Image 1 (tube, helix red, strand yellow):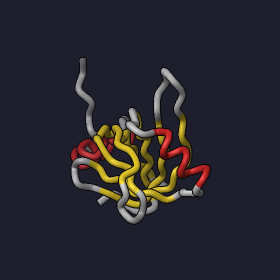
Image 2 (cartoon, rainbow, N blue to C red):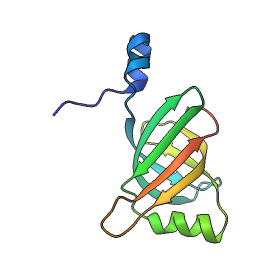
Image 3 (cartoon, one colour):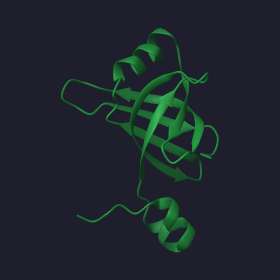
Image 4 (tube, one colour):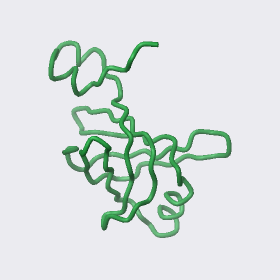
Length: 114
């Protein structure tokens, strides 16, 4: 099994290669409300591009709560806090979960992850 290469590290070391090979960075993280309340934990697959960053958070431990807050409460803005210390405000662009399938939440960043 080949270990994943971080697109962030690759872009710091080889600019030409980073344009050809864009792999998502996989980092454990937490989705929280803007006021800091915990919503769900999962593994964020972060990709960066000219239009900012996006993340697909997989293996959510509480996917129903995200969907409930999105549809019932109108929550659209959340904070993604990554285990490596970076965090940023993001907009929920989609959720998907069914019994036996992936439990995911798609995010689009408003500001750089820092």
